[in-house]
Image (tube, rainbow, N blue to C red; front, top):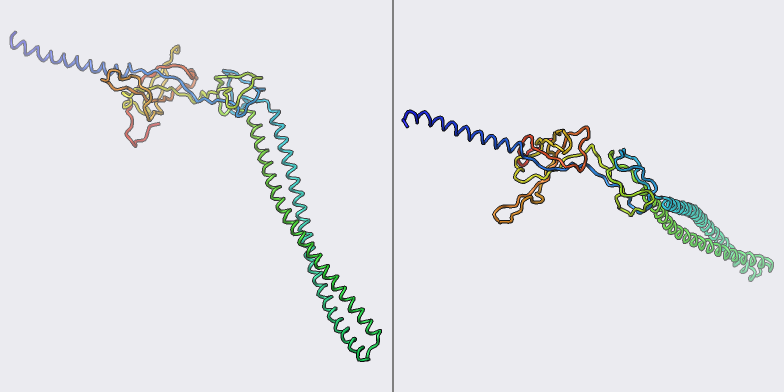
Length: 359
């Protein structure tokens, strides 16, 4: 072949080869973006409704598919026994309060009596001291008149008069001394009674607290007989019927909040570096001629199960990461549990450590 012809053909061949390589590269990249598909499941916030105490169902108005509003009564158990328990506890509390009230009144009366007795002791002691002074004066007069009688300057009648007065005052002093002792004994007795009453009041106050706790416990038990809807949603599952006995902790209804739903996919670790929060997806569901837009809003921090195991010891296991996509579905076409196919619409890399995640 002539050199001139070769010079013309070679540039053409090089251009063709470069064009083919470029096209193949672009096709491969496009294929990566277009054909990367991940199987996912539609999920939503689920709330299991069940009693904390065992009982028989008497009210279960909603069935699967019914819409409920927050606060609607979803479940009520037979609460007759709980109401009776609350009434008994309330009666016990009232009796304990009355006993405490009566004890307070008795303590007040006892303290008043104690003050009165103390005043009587003081009065008796004053009377005793007054009588003692009179007795001392009577003794001096008796001793003087006796001396005068012995010297012949006083008559026998005078001696008898002063002797009688002296003896009378001694008896009076003994009587006042006995009154003082009685008043002091009464005061000590009342003080002991008041002390015992105070101890009793502490017991009665403790009993009132116990009865109040019983009432609170019975109220909680009664409240647990009725379960309301914690969220707006739809009943997705009903496990019992009215009249059946439900054990404590069993799920009677499951309510799904369809306003808070997402698509979960398990992303191969080979894609983790190419998808981050905010990456856009297209979601399709079988039987729905519709495409839903979605964005990554949560990615698992740790790897989960492996999609490919190393059985030949020549390859590494390929693990997955949990990824959640917030899907745009205002009409509510997507239902929890549906299987969907999610395809990346944009490849947004995972942000560097410390970088804020887009919302």
